[in-house]
Image (cartoon, rainbow, N blue to C red; front, side, top):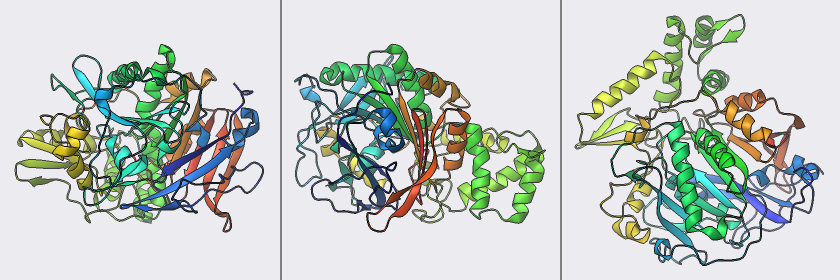
Length: 523
C-alpha cells in the first residue's frame, strides 16, 4: 500500500469557513493547484447564499504514498481515478432531465430516486456525476447526521453542484462543488428522514440497523449503476455521520465487493464521553462560564485531577453540568458557530404553528444525565398532543430548502411522489426515537486501520460546540497510531501566507483543523 503510485489530479475540500486559497510554504506542505474552476477567482473563498465556504486545493504528482503522506490531507477525501469501460446502465427513469431553479441545465448527468433497504424501507438518493471524468473519478458517498437529519442539506447548502438561495426558488452553481472531481452520492438515511420512508411507518431504529440498511441501499445503487462498481469509493459525512461512516465502512469492508479506499469525517461525533468532557473545557476557555461556574464544575465533577462531566452520578456534578449546558445550548449562542449569529435571534425552545408543533433538535450533549433524559421524555409526551410535529436544528434557517423541496414541480423533476409527506430537514420520528448502541467508534476504526487498506481524514472547524475539535483530537490520539508528521500549521494565500489551521498525520490517518471555521455538526 505504501509504495503505490499516485497519478496527477486536482482535489478540493469545501467546508463552511472564513478562509482562502491553500498555498505551499515548504517542501512538506501541500502543493498549490495551478488552476481553479472556470469562472471562479483566487483566492477561493466567499459566500454563497448565506453560508461561508473555503476551498482547499491541491495537486499531487507521481509520488508514492510514503513520499506524499505529509501532503496527503485532502486526497483522503478524493483519491485517484480507476479507468473502466463506459456503460449505459444508469437508470433512465431516475435521470433528472430538467431541474427547476437553474438558469441553465447542467452539462453533467444527475439522478434522483429510491433505493431498497430491509423490509419495506426505501431510501431516497440524489446522485451527481463528476464534471471532470465520471468514468474514472471516484464515487463519494455523503451522509448528514442528526441522527435524523437530511443529506439534502449537504447537497443544496454545502458542497453540491447547485446551491439553494434564500428565496427558496433559485439555484446557483457552486464553483467549489465536490462533483468537480468526483461522482457524489447523497442518501437520506435512515428511513423517515427527508423523502426516505417505510411502508409500515416504523421509524424507531439504531446504529446497527442503520448501517445495515445503508449497506443494502448502497449495494442496490451499484446494481443500478454497475459502471461505477470498480471506481475508487469513499464514505464521508458530518456530525452523527461520525457514527454512520465507520459503522457502514466496517460492513463494506467485511462484505468486500466495493473498492473502498477511505473515509472522511467532518466535525464528527466519535465518542460521547470525549465530546461531552471536552466541551466543558472548550466552553470555559472560550469565555462562556466565568470563574465561579468553572470552580463549581471542578468541585462537583473532578477528583484527583480527573474530571467526569459525561456521566457522573453525583447530584452536585449533574446540577452544575446542567447549568453549563444551558449556557451552551439555550441562551442564544449558535452551537454550530460560537462566533456566528443565531438565525432568528434567541430561539424559543418550543413553538407551535397552528396544529403543528416545532421542536428543537435535542442533540445528544450530556445525554447520560437525568436532566437531559427528562427533557427528551417531556418532548415525546408533548408531541402526542399535536397531529404534526417538526424538528429544527437551533440557530439555523432551512425554510429555503423546505420551500424548494416541497415544490410540486421540483418533486416531479426528482421523481418524488407527491403523496409522500412534506420534506423537513430533520425528522422528529427518527430523532427522538433513535437508539444509540455505542459509546464510541474506537473498535470500528481500529478494525479499519488494522487492515492497512484505508486512509482516514478527520477535519474540524474550530468554533463548533456541538462536536468540538478538542474532543475529536482526544479521540484520534486515543487510537494510538504511529505519528508520521507532528502537528504543524497549514497556510493559505500565495502572497499573505496566513495560518489557516493545523494538521497532524499518523499512519493512514490525518487530523485537520480549519481556523475560525464551522462545519455543521449534529445536523
